[in-house]
Length: 224
Image 1 (cartoon, rainbow, N blue to C red):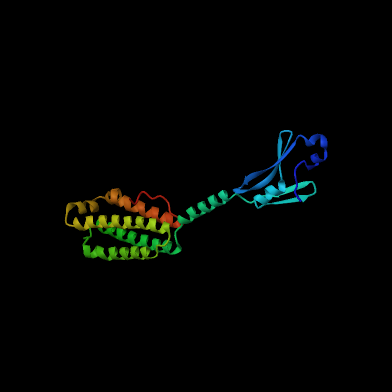
Image 2 (image 1 turned 45 degrees about the vertical axis):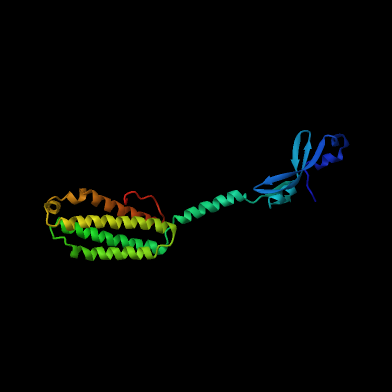
């Protein structure tokens, strides 16, 4: 049974001449279909049941109430799905997060041991540094092996940058072990703290630890 608003008007012959009925194409929530349109005295009315049918909705009559339920539009659903996919692409995998924490710890151990040796005037040789460097390199290798999501891949580049920074910093002290430049760090308690590369390494490590804790990728400028 088709429900037409003001259907009772058809019972009055004096109004019949003012009523115009036609079929038009209705687009609702991305759905399209033909529906009866009635114009009465300049006002337009539509077939309620037909409208709900086109939109894959439903109409219920409960006492004096008419309950119309329409599903969300396809565009809104697609937008929601796209946003969900974008958010998912920012998430780290569980294995990457675990390996990332270990990789940061190994690079921090390398940098911290190097800083302590410099501040205490201990000789910094390549053979001594290699033990810390090799462990950090292995940690980075493990991290690369478990990389799986788009966020993992982008974050891996940041970890590689941090490794390269520690490597350059370490090489600087190995090459300068017999020069006065290395001795200056031992004489000044603030020299290492104020060193630009040292600050960069520390800042990058903190940022990497922060995004791993959050579980999702974020902008990290300090590692570049």
